[in-house]
Image 1 (cartoon, rainbow, N blue to C red):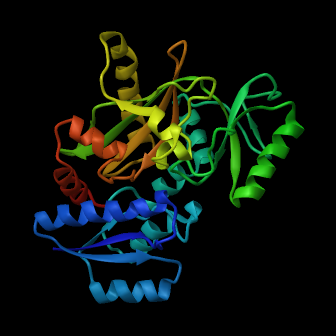
Image 2 (cartoon, rainbow, N blue to C red):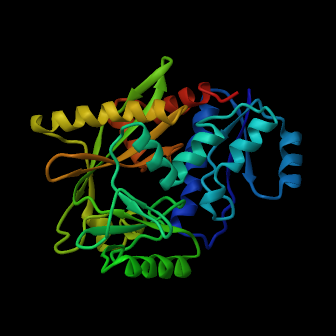
Image 3 (spheres, rainbow, N blue to C red):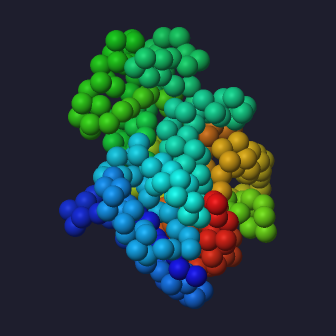
Length: 326
C-alpha cells in the first residue's frame, strides 16, 4: 500500500516546537517502511489547488495525518482532515470535528462540563463560566487554539484585581502574541498525562506519567514553553517525567484512567490520544486538555508511554494506520 504523510510546512528558522514535526515524520516513515508501505511526504498548505494536484499525482491509499497547524495557525488544524473527508481519502487519527473541538480549549471544556468530566473554571473576554468576580484566585492565561505551551511563560499565572484588569491582561497578551487567549483557574498541585491507543477494536490506556517539578522555588509549577522546548533553560532541566508511583497513588490513577476512556468516547477519538491532568492538594482531578493526534516524536510523552507499556513505537504506528477514518 502507498501512504502519504501529511504535515505542516516548516522552514529552517521555525521554532523548536514547529521543527519537531521533522522528528515525527522520520519515525512514522521508518515505521511504515518497516511494514512494507510505500511512503511519500506531502506538506499541507492553504494553497489547495497545488496541494490537491500533488495528492492526485501521488494517489495514496491512505494518509498519515501529522498536521498540527497551517502556516503556524493552530485554529486551522481541522482543515487537513476536512479536506480528506471531502475527497474520500482514508486517514489516521481523529475526524475533522473531533480535531476542531479538542484543539479549541474552550469548546473542549464546554464538552467536558456537559459530559460530567471535571475541568477548571474559566473566563474569556466576553464570557464567564461558573465564576463571579475573578479576585483572590490564581489564573493561568492560555492560548485558546495553540498547543505545545505556545505563548506560556513564567508570568502566565496571575491574580486579577478585577474584571477590567482581567480584560486588559488578556488583551495585552493577544496583542503581543497575535492569537486568542483566555484565563483558566490555576490548579496548584500535581500534573499527569495519560495516553491511549486503539488496539483490538477498543481503547487501551497506557502507563501514566507525572511531570515532577524539581527545585522550582517560588515559581509556579507549570510546563511553559521553555520547560517543554528550551533544553538550555532551568525550566527544562527542572521538569522531570516519572512513571514511578506508590500504592497510595493507585486511587487517583485509576480515576484518571476511567476519565481517559470517558474522554475517548465523549470526543469520538480515533487512533490515539493523550489526556493532560492536574490534581489539587485535596486529590480532586481536573482535565486540562484532550489531545487528539498528539505528538509522536521519539521523546514525546505519547512515545514514552508506549515504551513504558512495553510497545515499540513502530508497532503502535502500524496499529494507528489500521484504525482509519473512511
